[in-house]
Length: 465
Image (cartoon, rainbow, N blue to C red; front, side, top):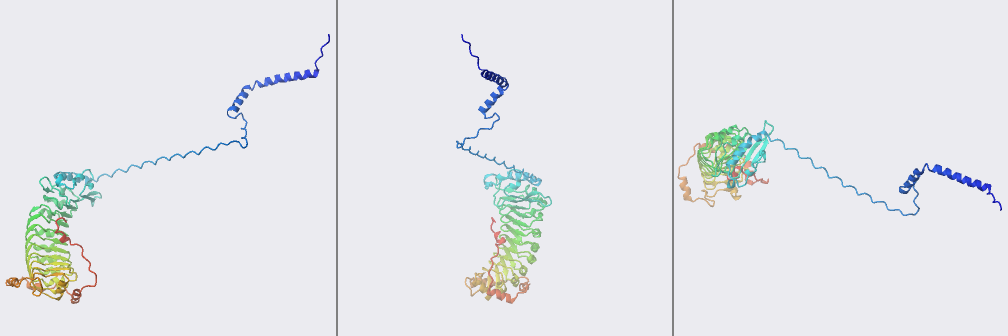
């Protein structure tokens, strides 16, 4: 039998080295098996394992970038802060709330409050009440109730009347009280003098009756007194002309008796005694009002006697109306001194004689009304005014003019013995009248005429003014 050959020694050596190396690798690999598995997991999931990511292939697909996020809407602005609380009501306003509410209860709803004024009289702030006005009270530096303007509100109670006592005197800061056309029948408080700053009282076009309300005389600070269009009777007290008034309207009542002789004491600018039943002459003291009197109305009374020359002293007066009376005598020559006169009305009286040329030459005269008298003559300057329709002498005794009285009527008038006391005074001229000025005036002025402001005295003849 043949003997097997022995393997090659070199091949055997190589086999042993491979086995040895294999055992060595298995011994070292067992230590890091867990870590190697984790790294493999990380490589699969997130590309980790401590190695940088593989570069993107060139010319590969690149997805577009995501759209930008839309900006969030800005939050709405915060709400405005609440308004500050209203200032506290002045104590002087709270003081008058109760009297106003009591007066409100006197006024019947419906026809006695046609404008529903009292519906606004609620709450503590009386300054918001319709018909009332507020102002800072002198000496207190706080708001007070300064005025009540009830003109043409038509207030009344269920009997159609209204009293104002226990009301006005409880408004201590009152400056004015206007109540034209409100059915007021009386109740002017006796202690009205306690209202320190009370300057204006208007009770016109109401239902006041009886004698002049003497309570008014206690309001010594009054500057405006309006009692027109009522039913007051009897004489007016002389004390009314001692009040420090600027306006006195007593027209359209039933006052009687003579105008007090102390008329000249009044400091008024506007005086209206029209449409009453005054008798006797115009007081001579009227000349003492020369520094203040602007307009005076005596029209439609029963005044008699002659015109006093003192009227010619009224150097500021623009309106003088004594029409529709029983005045007689000639026009005093002093009337030529009325340099500011705009309207002079002496119509419907018993005046006679020539119309003074100096009166027709007054520089600002726009209306000279002498109709329905017994004048007998007009000169050339007056005739120019007739042509300009500034002078009305109809129904007189001027024989060469149209629209005159009949000769028989004129003769019957002059047959009566008519004389004026102090006849010499009618020729007195208390000023210097420049002849050149009179002539220039008669020729007309080259400067444009400016219409005067409306007359407050004539406006007072409207009951609703």
